[in-house]
Length: 272
Image (cartoon, rainbow, N blue to C red; front, side, top):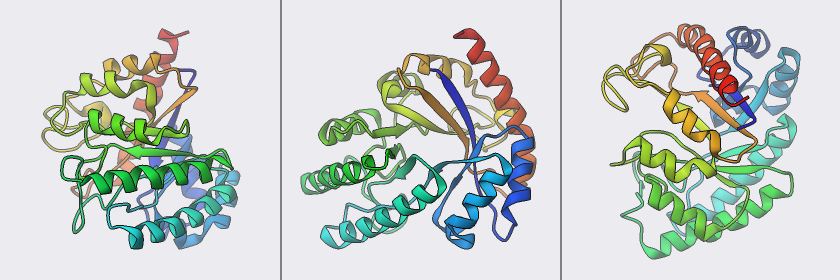
């Protein structure tokens, strides 16, 4: 692992971006992730200026694709891809998050519920999408999330194998469904470029979400195991900064930024 970048999933609405990006930078973050609502709230061009002025980067954009509903949802996903690739070009962003269908609510299809046709639709669509993204050096990053075709390691590997494109990678969002984290890391280390990093009061995926340095799970062994992933870089990105219970995202950023910088320094020293 040659580089570790630190990201923050932008949870805010109605904030002027430049000065608040500088605040995140001062807490130690290198860039942000943007979901559709905050991206569209001010527009890609305004975000691009704010990121440049603050010395920050767009590390990932997060559209919602859906390959599970046949041609109608696939056609809509093509439109979403075109829009996000255009925004990625403006923002100089080289990574788009991928879901294979809705991650919650109506229409959720997990890996072991999907029909063979849905697997085929996802694989063929992703081949097409990867080829389009590759024209501007953008990777598509599968978010390993419950209720998707990559909710566990064997399923994620099947999808990667069937798509067979070098710019399809994984966001190893632990824990995966019914899977020990060590098995997940061992299985997906070579494909992982991004992690939505969380911690909990009791253990991996157990208890309440909390700040990274105050939780029960020790991330160092997992990240050490990723050092052999043969990737140029890995992004560690703080997601759900309110911890799902209304905590102040700025306080989370204030605590998580220095913690992640210490962790990065340790890992880089160990691999120097």
